[in-house]
Structure formats: structure tokens, C-alpha cells
Image (cartoon, rainbow, N blue to C red):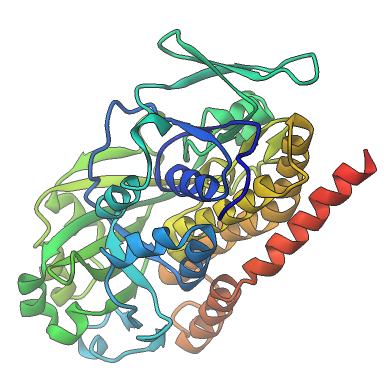
Length: 422
């Protein structure tokens, strides 16, 4: 987009997918921004990423290069097939499907997607080894925010957006570090994640099941599979429920063995047990979210939360990344508006973002938790697959067919009204 460069600068805390896509979106609209990332460099995290249809539309709104980056690494849209993983005799029967080859889910390698996105970020736009410690807000109008980092260095910006993920430090700055929602809570579910060579997966599951997306529901557990790496690998995520507490307050990922995984997933059929045994290097990923205590506001003055920092959810909807991309599209549209010229405009933009995005983010948290219970056969529906299908379809309808353009229009109208009233 052409136009004059904005006379202010936005600091983005965190350079994950949300932060990078936000930066690309702002740069597209001539909004100066700088990313502060606590890691010393990027590494290709070797896990799969599910992308829902609403995310694809939001990527185009952010900047077409975001969708191009995804297309370069993602599998074609696929249909999600649901199976009863508890019954060997019936596990070839598709209970119901979700999506199709035109509007279905997409899968990609998270690290590869991020690598392609980074091609659109100039070196001077990102600073590594910068972990935010605190923010000093100016008392005088027109003064800038002052950020203090753990290494003792400082920087200034006119606005700050926390994209620092589920363990967000910025969240505590916005709502108070003593607030119950400053830290995520354990959902008593964890996952095993791994990649399996497609040739081995085909031997056990057959070509049709291995090369599409599968969801095997079971008692207190479920397994999700989908192809990545241009069909060369099968991404497998095995979820399990537990009554035990997570053993660490600081580490959400802990080492595990295949034996651990097999023990936790013993209710699955023998065929799925064989698939599980193909996993070689395993970690256990604890599932934390903000479902116990909702974040009361995403914005405080010229500081705002976006993505998982604002509405960290479990992955059962496969929609966390998609909602983050929607966030980026709305935020970039607000800050690019001609009425936003200074800290007053930034504050109004952040307030409008909070008003327009908080309900959807918190809906995702609730519905993702519910989906996990449905897949683990822990709800009042049990194994009534007709009722299971009906509720899952209703969730997908609201998630996939969200009217982002209207959301942006409403947010802009809200922001302009706030500025006109002052």
C-alpha cells in the first residue's frame, strides 16, 4: 500500500508467527515497527502447524506475501476424517468428515513457514536477545514509552504490542503481575508430538488414511494426524487427559519415551499402537491456557496484547494461529487509519482492538477446551457420534466462516468514534 509513513513507531515484543505477521502487516501499511525477540536466533521448530480456512483469508488481508509464504510450504487443503480409535473392528469406518479439498484444513512445518516469513523482515527490523523486563510510561503527553530489557539495555517506542506468547510477560504489565490471568493454568491434558516418515505410516494406515488428516477419538485421549513437508512426513499429535498436576511451573515441555506414550494411550486399537511405536524422539507438551481466568482487557494505554499473549488456548480447534492472524489484520488496519497520528490515536486503536477482538479470543479458549473433551469422549455425548458431529460442525462454522472484513469495519468505526469524542 502506498502513502505517507506514519510519524510513530510500534515495538513488537516477541518474534513468533504472530509477531512476524504483524510486522509484515504494519510495514505493508507504512507503519514503522521493530521486533524485540528474546531468543538469540531463530531455529526451525520441528512441529506441525494446522491452518484453518479463516486464517487463509486473514493472511491475504494482512499482506498477500503471508499467504504466499504458507503456500510455499503447506499441503493442499484436506478433508479431516474422524474415526473411532477404540474399536479395531470398526476403525476403518469414517464416522464423519470436516472440510474438503477446496476449503479444508492446511498443514505445514511451523519452522519452514517462519523461515519464509522472515524473508520479508529486514535485518534492521528485528533485535535478538531482547527479553522485556519492564515498561516506563510517560506522564507527559507526547512522550514515548521506555522499555527496559533483561540485559540492561533500553529502547523507546510510541506504542507496544505484546506478541510474546503463552508465557507473556507483557500480559502482566497490562493487567498486573498479581492478576490470576497473568499466568496460564494447566488444563490437565498433555500431548506427544512427532514426525513419522510417510512411507512407514502408509504401511500401517494405508495410503488413504496416511495421506489425509485423521482424528481418532478414544477414552481420555485422541490422536490427530496430517501430512507435512510436501507429503514426505506424517505429523502426529497424541493427546491424553490426566488428573495429575504438571510437574514443572516453568517448563511446559519435558522429555518422554515411547513407553510413556504407549502407556498413556493404551486404550487405542492395536493398529494405532503400531503407529505410536514409530515415534522415535518424543517430548511431552503440557497444555496450558487462559480458560480458568480470562484476561479482563487486552489494552492499557499505549500497550496492547495480541495473539497467545491475549488469548492463549489449547490446540484442539487447530485455530490458535488463525486467530492470531486475524488479530494482526485488525490491528494493522487500525494503526494504518489516517486518524492515528500520535499516542492519542494509538491508545484509541488499542482500545478498539480490545473491544473488537476479546470476545472472539475468549470464545476460542472455551470452545477449544470443549473440543478436547469431545474428542476424549468425556462429555455428556460420550460415543454418540451423531451428537458429536453436530457440535463439532457448529464450532467449525463459527470458526471458519468469521466475517473478518466486518470485524475490521466495526473496529475502525469504534476507534474513530473514540477519537471524535475527545
